[in-house]
Length: 108
Image (cartoon, rainbow, N blue to C red; front, side):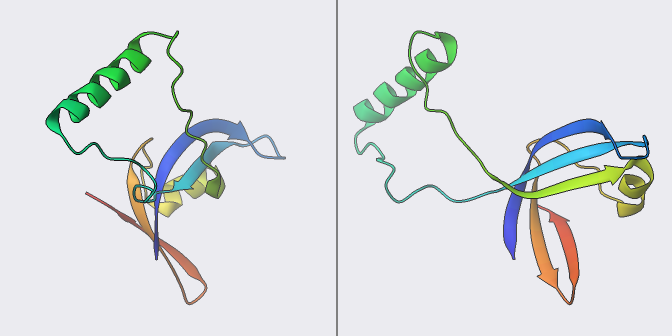
């Protein structure tokens, strides 16, 4: 079992011209053990201020998160409806691969 997050949903057409969806799922991982966590309240506050500045002002470079897709689904509208899952961007799912099947369980 592994955990994925819906990274992107796009409209697409298959080779026959049928309208469908392209759903990109990336692996959701815990924080890297190499990430430095501030120890003092002052350091935590400074880190939060820097993160806010990076989001608000483009002159401060922000670390780009690059995520490789774990699963790409190309589904027609009918296939998407048959699957019975309403994928939403940033929603997290547990994925279970078992007995030649793939199961998605929404993480609350």
